[in-house]
Image (cartoon, rainbow, N blue to C red; front, side, top):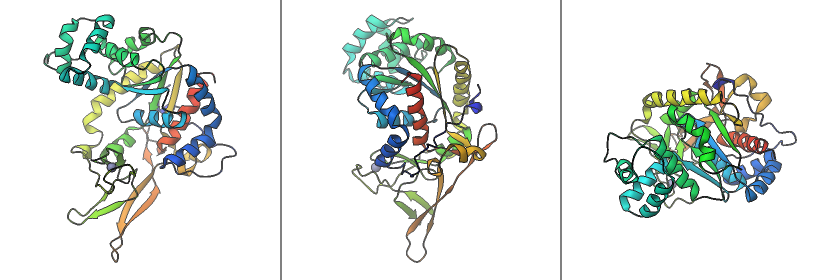
Length: 359
Ligand SMILES: [Zn+2]
C-alpha cells in the first residue's frame, strides 16, 4: 500500500444526523460519544486491565501529538500516555544539566543499556560536550525504556521512533525489549499531503502565554484583531484557562517558508514509512487526513472538514468579521482534496484501535 492509497475512513454514521462543534471540548465529547460510544466503553474497560504499545508513524507536522491527545480526551487520560522521543532526549539533557534525577537515570542505564559507549560517557554525549557523537539508536532505546518503566500501567503511543532507517530493525524488537510481551503492539500510519503540512506551517501561530497553537488560515480563535501599522489581521488567544485572554498570538520566524526547510526530513520520514508499510506480522492502522473532493459526500460530513478563514473589517465600526469558506488542496498525487478536522481523524483512530485489539 502506498501513502496515497490509504482507504478513506467513513465517519458518516447512520442515525447520527446532528452536527457537532469540533472546536470545543464539550462538542468533541458529544461527537465521540455519538459516533463511537460503544468502542469507547470497550476501550475504557480494556485499559482498566491491560495496555498496548502503538508506534505513531507520520511525517513531521502530520498531527501525531494532536491525534493522541484527542484519543486520550475520548477514552480518558488515566491509562494512556504519549511518549515523544524528542521530549525524552530533552528531558535527559535536563536531568544531566540540573543533576535532578541523575542517580536514578544512571542506575537504570547501568542495568539496561547495551551499546558502544560506557555509561560514564553518556552524560557528556547527552549534554553535547562530545560533539562528534550523535545520540546512538542504542541510547535512544534505553531512554525510551526508562520512560516506559515510569509508566507501568499505561497504554503508550510512541512518537518519533523509528526516525532513521537504522532504527527500523530496533522497532521490530522493541516489544520484546521493553517487556510488553503479553501486550499487543501495532503501527499507526498517518497520511497527510505535503500541501496541507505546508499551509499548517505557513500560517501557524502560538499564544506566548499558554502556548495554545492555532492557525490564522485553518484554525482561528473567536477573537480577531486588525493591526493598522502592518495592515494585517491577527488572532488573540481565546483559551478561557489562559491567564492573559486576549493575548496576541505570534508566528515563528521562518515559518513563512512552509515545508521547504524540512523537505529532507519529510523525505526521510517517507522512506521509513514505505519500508514499514511492507512489514508483515504487525497490525497496522491507517489514518488519512485528506479526502478527495469527489468522495467526500459519501464518507464524511461537512462540519468534519477543515475550512479556510479570512477576515474583513467593517469600515464603519472597525469590527473584524471572520469569513469561513470551504478549503481544498491537492494531495501528493495531485487530487483535489479536503482536509479532515483532527477530531474526525481521531474518530477513525478510536474505532480502528478498538478493532485491532479485538474489542
Ligand atoms: Zn493563551
